[in-house]
Image 1: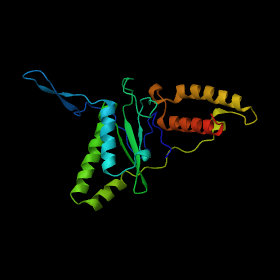
Image 2: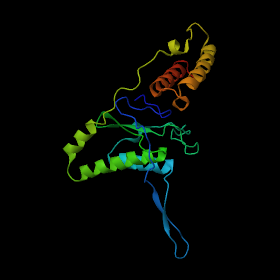
Image 3: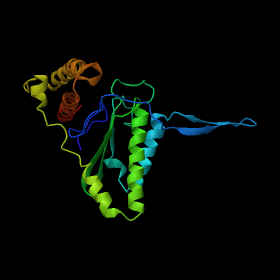
Image 4: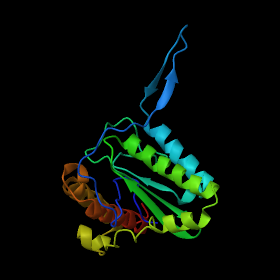
Length: 214
């Protein structure tokens, strides 16, 4: 799979939501004080991620095939960071491999990334209930609707970054990084850019760095 964890790689066959709403997802936190009370707290990114990972494990999906894509920068482990505030586009897309097929689920209904992640987990849980109640055939048919389309088209990175192969490797690397920064400032969704173009830009950068041995 060539889907990016950041920025959001939205599947081409999924419609976008025009108006986002506040979610009801959360967890109950109990007070330890005498006569304590319980209240519903907001889910964190890490908690929502954990829910998705648990549901996919129950579907026997291998962890290494899972890509969770959002507009939150990722940490060194590739997980979206929860300390950067909410991006303008809070949508999420989850890609995975199951029974040899690429699957995808994308949700942007809610105004927080964590809640859209939780919505994916809740949807997976509901589908797992179908499996538990003997609806294996129904479940297989349902998952046909989540088949992932091919990722962004491959782009010649030298063409995109306008770099001559005759240049020394160090010079090519320098120009790749410079061109990427300039194009990213124009194409990133948070600055009014396009998701598909940004995904192509990320793919071109990754291909360049791999070929140049960076």
